[in-house]
Image (tube, rainbow, N blue to C red; front, side, top):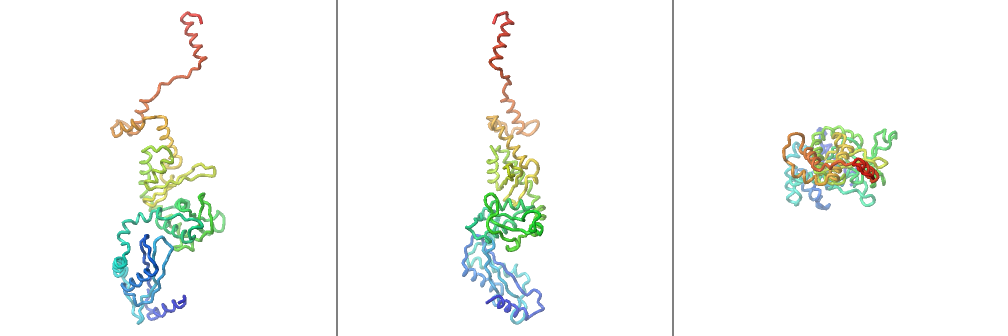
Length: 377
């Protein structure tokens, strides 16, 4: 059957009762991301499902869609019978569909939706997405999977923040240069990116991707996400402060500790390689923050200053950790324990100040001393 044959079949049924305003039904059957189901089994599941919800005798079309990470089907049908009577679809999702879903899960030995919900957060983590490899993976499918998963699950408030996530998967969203027609018309392209973040390969228009993650769509997300991410700001700040209290030896150690706690730190550098900003990607809450959004202590300069202080403390004050451990937890009359410990340690190891005296100066001083005693040189 070609497109027109299919259309005529549906029109034949819908014309039987033109009073029915809602005369079609779109169904999406979604399976666990780990399911490997062949086409024959998918068709069998679709037929069984339609029978169970009371649409077995209706004409319907089944499409397998591969635009996302998990396997799923789309089913199109009409709720107008051959005799012109309407099939009641009120609460069909809550009643008939829910019952059919549970029965089919058992019958075909599928992953239960209930168990999937328990591990939903794990499935949404970027680690489940594979990096797009130019020339090794299908361009549109790979880009679509990554773009849809990230734009639907993460809270970002600008295109650079979104690209900070995309960078981990060799993808980049590009609006074109300022002043260009593409930029003025709010066009958006998605493409593969190399290790330096440069576009490679043939780009894909945002409007051609399922779900249409266009610039207009993203701008709405920017505004919505500003409010949605706010409650998670303090949790991220607390995590950063907690790691810094463990006195990481350098920026690399600090970044690794953050990563273990579920946070990626992306340093933004200029053409000279100098760090001018930091972006935090909190995979636990699916939120993206620039350092300036959290406050001065969490900006690039703030973090580098704090790490520098820690490095100086560990490099020039050997034994600090032992003294800190000995005094940690004890109450002090003033200030924070860490500051009191540091002050105490400074007092204990402060060396006596001595001036450096050259050998020539030392000889002159010795001669003067002998003259005072009445001795000849």
